[in-house]
Image (cartoon, rainbow, N blue to C red):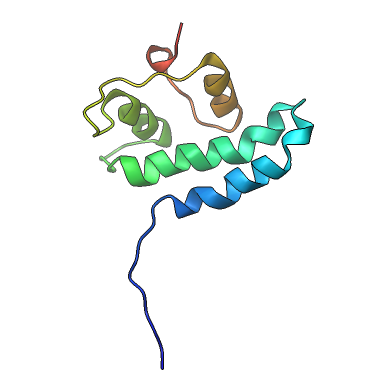
Length: 100
């Protein structure tokens, strides 16, 4: 007998990177320790929170989510630290979405 489950758990793709970060909390002295989590979180937003428009880059999709995230919340802002971490792994967050 073969059982096929069609259950989608969108947060499942975040489990491993966050667990890896949890395990490595003793090494908080470098930005590289957060790169896997930042990459996973940004990729999650891009893949599950935005649709692909013609000519879109990953940066376009990420920043569009901050401006219109589909939850009726309006603009979301990240910290300057998160912006810097994101930039370090190739995701540019525009200044308008960063806390002053």
